[in-house]
Amino acid sequence: MTSFPAHPKIKHKKMIFMFSPYLIREDFPILKRKINGHPLIYFDNAATSQKPRQVIKAVKEFYEKHNANIHRAVHTLSHEATELYEEAHEEVAKFINARGMEEIVFTRGTTEAINLVAYSWTLRNLKTEDEVLLSLMEHHSNIVPWEILSEIKKFKVKYADVNGDGTLNYEAFEEAISRRTKMVCITHVSNVTGIVNDIKRIARVAHDYGALVLVDGAQSVPHMPVDVKGLDVDFLAFSGHKMLAPTGIGVLYGKRELLEELDPFHGGGEMIRDVSYNPARGRCIITWNTLPWKFEAGTPNVGGGVGLMAAIKYLKSLGMENVKAHEHTLTEYALKRLKDYPYITVYVPEETSTRSGIIPFNVDDFDSHDVALFLDGYGIMVRSGFHCAQPLHQRLNLHSSVRASFYVYNVKEEIDRLIEALKEIQQL
Image 1 (cartoon, rainbow, N blue to C red):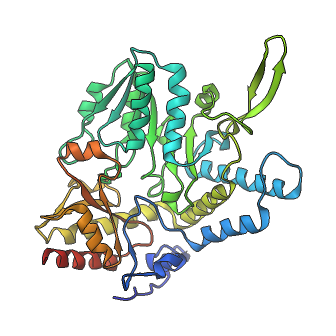
Image 2: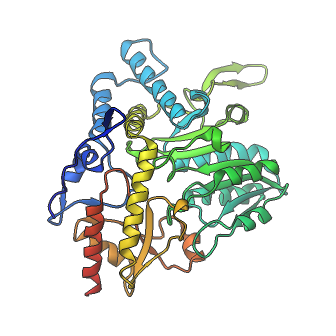
Image 3: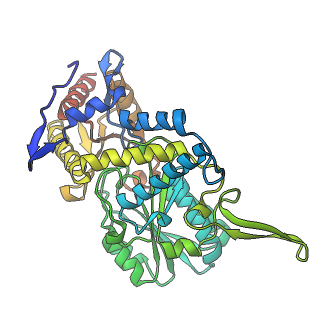
């Protein structure tokens, strides 16, 4: 197959309903590429997403017309850049239903957002007898910072177990939490299995014990509606590059009252309101800037913020419920097809409502990297290895796995191509 069929616009409630993956594909220039003589099929969306021309245009236009540093100069370009950057914060706040842009801190990505909370909060608040509770399904970005800091502050890191199908063991979670637990750090959606955790339930239990909740939303915010008020989470971290935006831009959401209490993670320009030398004390006295700027030291990634804003506007035009439904349809279709091949083992739970558009699998007698390289020969991009979640692979007794992950521009015909390629590899 060298191309995919066009799809007509669908009439819906007296308007043009624009969500069609066949139409959406036209917005992504990279999908016109051929890899090894085959049309590109991109199933590595959990790692990073491709970028629509609307995002590419927004970033290009910023650098061609508005590029300047923000919050510093009085000239026209600085004013324009500042307005765009602040508007980007406002768009993110509305997208996740935060109370305002004061609760939105731009970071380099999910990893930096988690580290910001870990260092800013832990160094001032945790004592030896305190505990931080994680789960065994966490990405390394939500494990390593806490383990590093536990060596410094001597608090205890605990891990809630997962079941044999990769779902969170809620009973084990509720047994592990106690009055000593000061922070619960949990992923919203597993980047290995696509399992969706019940964040409302987790937050309710955590708050009953007086603990704060930090959610890794890297695999949820790009793929489903996320309402921070409805979930009642204290912190939420996610990345722009997984939701059609450029790399190097991410978000930390925090409840305003908590961000007000935290000291900055990075020090430098922009994040201060006043620095004055006190001769009597022989030191500089520092007053932090207002939210969210006190957490955004130095020259920020303004172009990345503009790209993130364009990506959010694009996703909003599609409708996040539609994005979620489309991925669910693709996942169900792929799972149904994969069941016909006994030499392919899929690692997902039976319950469909707890899954996102991620399918981990292995092919009998083949290493995951060999499978990924074989598929690359057919122009099919998948992930292989531990996916930065080695403890979960250990818990599931997996040496590694192949991961196919879907997004708005993927179609069933691509899944058919994947199946045909997997049939070829078995013949080897």
